Length: 265
Image (cartoon, rainbow, N blue to C red; front, top):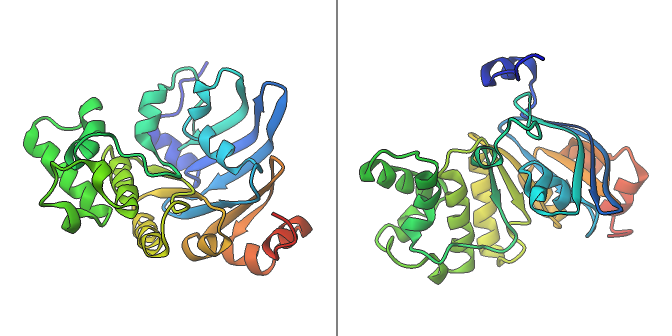
């Protein structure tokens, strides 16, 4: 059997960062995701939209193998990042999660200082040889998350003492700190007020210069504001995927049209 393609070879084989083919997800007897095919472009924002329970978050979690922790969950088909199948037995899920960062719906800072929230990942992955390198990673991650000026003089204070919007940007900084290539965001603004939401959206727009971002959102307005491509899920099926502008102004499928015009969902 041939060796898995290495990172550089794989890059030349495909223009997509993430490529999913015939993906099925089962929870026991429930068929939650059905036959999903999608190509996700590098250094761009792709939004997953659809009504509650449509499978968008379930599919997002397959990209970081979070469903591995659920006994009754079974994933079939193939998901490749840079041409490498992430479900191949040779792939270490811990290393995968260093490459694919995740930001959740509710900000979930660790019960540690602001500094240690960011330093935790680089420490366990051995990314810093000494304290000054770690300091640099912490400062750089907070700067990229637009948080440095607000927290630089209180890095030893608990992350849980910040406002909700700051906590979410801290969680984004924490994801960035291990130098991932992909950042997955599962409704990152649903617990935030409009001002904090605007800051996170601005941040997403800046981050796409260096990262491939996939965001699950209930807000069609948010998808329209932050994404270049949009995928519409319904009842576990990927109904339609395309340029965000086309999905919102000229959808090909009647179900997409009905959803974006508010007929259901």
